[in-house]
Image 1 (cartoon, one colour):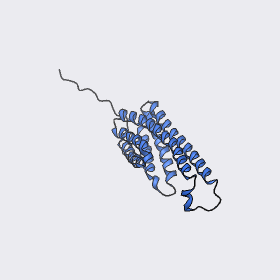
Image 2 (tube, rainbow, N blue to C red):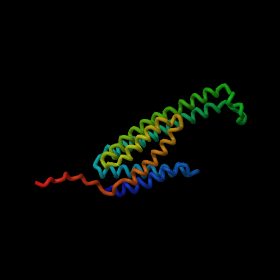
Image 3 (cartoon, rainbow, N blue to C red):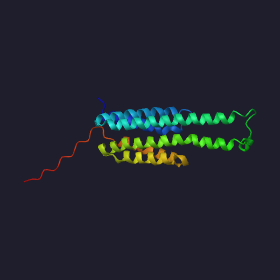
Image 4 (cartoon, one colour):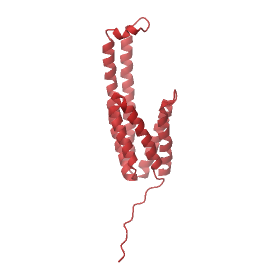
Length: 194
């Protein structure tokens, strides 16, 4: 049976790995491993707290983020290849004066919108999962991290969201490091002497 101690360890390691995204060449793979460890950690927390909605919401969040990314990459590739299909010579600075350049930029931004929408919906489900963990384990840092993820997802379209998401991931690591290794005992009411 999974325990909070295992969840804490996996969450700590996974959160730290997710922060190493900026490492050249290997950052994406390291982030993916970190994400998987955090997902397993949340599964263990869900089992320990006997609340399946915690893991279900986290899993939906991860799936939506991946689907949004795949759709966005497909759209962006289609836009890119359709734009360059008409060129026969080498890349020139005059490409910005090409009649289809405005169409390319517009189509590219339209390709980004599905990613943005999927990431916002993903952040909503992440917030549901982390809010439940925060209330059941009494660790408000999960709630703060989730709120920053949501704000970052909304603002990612203006690029400042990436900084906010990075801060949310730091707070996520702090939240996992703050977790207890055992289930907190319910407090007993004080007995009044007669």
